[in-house]
Length: 350
Ligand SMILES: NC(=O)c1ccc[n+]([C@@H]2O[C@H](COP(=O)([O-])OP(=O)(O)OC[C@H]3O[C@@H](n4cnc5c(N)ncnc54)[C@H](O)[C@@H]3O)[C@@H](O)[C@H]2O)c1
View 1 (cartoon, rainbow, N blue to C red):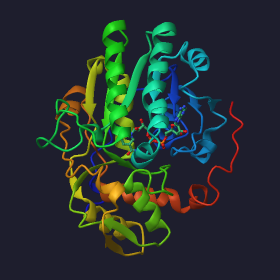
View 2: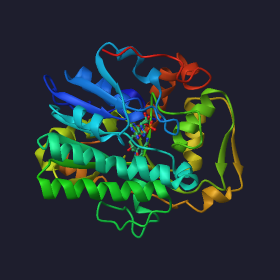
View 3: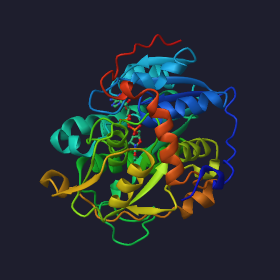
View 4: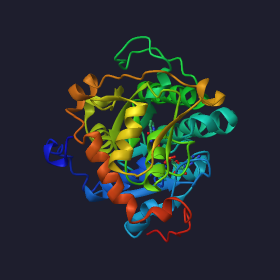
């Protein structure tokens, strides 16, 4: 078993001192961790989030930094408010999204609003009021659908199997179109299964790895569909944040799509056992595939990170086991805020 001690030295992240940063979706898993990181790097941070009931946002995620960030409760569907917020910013990270694959199948129009229309709104606001801002958008590896070749790279065709992934693919194209047509410096960072502190761990509607973590933290059994043989790529949140920050500060990334994915691929069953070993006390059980999950299943997702390594000099640094240990350490002191007391804290903001 690998340990923290064997990890490579952390990538040196650039200072963001004096930079004004807007993070849409900043109450969510990735956006809130990004807010913490940008503050630590010296940036002035504005969070723009509507605390969408169908996403993984959680006010507790920024409770400890509420005095240091500007918080705007707003929807990316509201063009006027967005237009006010993009002005004067040096970097805009778009982390706002409706983030559930099954929810998107049950509510395709709501998914369309957040994951396509909202992105167009944001791009319109940037085009009209701040074309100089660096715009970093997050895509998802599931945009590809079933693999046509392996490892899949950024040129792999996209035939997604669920509405969320389809809308993420479309909005990624909007971002590239605006970047090209209006000379806006844009980068797409596509992510695999990201796990770690501040994730939504309460519902199987979101990323399965974080849901398994939530079950393990409660000492519950983990349920794997079928044999759990399909391979997945995992990345710890800190490596994801490093990719996003590096992308925001490197002109070589402008106009590019980059897979920020880990070096290692694991079967779902192996992931479940690893989580039990490092986090919980339950067992791993196998059940029949529910039909609504089987129809959107993509099989093995084996991905290449060669391009991002070359472009940003980025390497994933936290191995999966160390990541699970850090995740456990975070959640064990505040678990109630991710379950029964979810979203009961109020934010005053700056
Ligand atoms: N977590 C992962 O494993 C993963 C993997 C691939 C891609 N991504 C992408 O990363 C980004 C962030 O994901 P996350 O895991 O942090 O999700 P999350 O669900 O934890 O956070 C999303 C945030 O967006 C906010 N939001 C939703 N709709 C909004 C709207 N209309 N206006 C303003 N805010 C809105 C929510 O309130 C929430 O705080 C998303 O684009 C997602 O598609 C995440």
